[in-house]
Image (cartoon, rainbow, N blue to C red):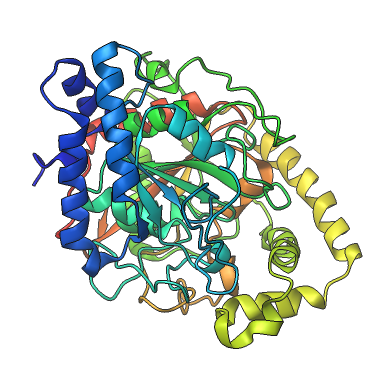
Length: 461
């Protein structure tokens, strides 16, 4: 299985193209054949684009011959089906808001096309990305590649599944409360939520919560994808120029001795015991890599109420007619819109003020540390079809309140990744590495150092 084209890394594919050992058209056909054979079972795609993929691959082969190809020339990739793509339906996981032919590409779709990559299609999402599961009214849920009957997580559900099962190396995700890190942790792959603004958002980021980023099987591939995605775009006033000429090149720079803070609970989170023990072991491993690791009590108060106020307002704005289409809209999304209508501008204002204070609080408590280590999630994959786990370590949560290690860093805009660190009862667990804003390269270099000692394992699919 590892020799199949779909499991080759982006770096390996690029090298094989340069040496003339493979052609992009041949690789694309192999990956499309794998999707055709497997995706009836895993449902990672809502739309596969074979004609577009082969056109992209033929163009890539021509550019490779001419020496004019972009950085990802001929490398297969996918787009999350929340990203508008001209000429390809964008479904948003919805029968109500599906757009059969968006007028223009979102910035990230435009950038990845310009990189020379081969677009395989659009990946499965819950409706408008509202939850950490994959179920949706448009094409239904996708399967966790490690265990039937468990969720792959969400909302970048299909992207993480596609990475895990060998549908090419590069997969774009987005993350408003953990939607890259949740499925990456549950599916045992690498996912990086970049610093806010590093990747321009289409066309609005929803109260500056949602971040676009890469999902891949390796840190290096994620860095290559981030290189292609990152940069200022005038259509997004909050986007920023990339601080790195190349995140992939930055991985080659040896890490200095780092001072790392390890927090098992951020001061408020409940964690399943098996997950807590595994992540603590992973954090301690950084000492063996030559870094200083210190367990800290951050003593933070749970900022879920801040995220929730902004989250509700975002969905009230993006799905204003949800209540007019109750029978066709996910019940959980209907409930969010109903709750949002009970809120007023005063609540949102209080949340925005508190959000600014949260970043200052975290910066002060992590002063003197280079990175923060903590769990990506407090549990392993819960049953498929549930919007959230029933309980975590005996504690019940509403909506995305269970993603208690994720949403703080959506609020602060800091870079945060999930790197696989082992298994509990056969299900993957992720270690989260959090850095200072625009210090994504340090996060990626630390993740690569850990990954080198704990390489990706193939799922049983």
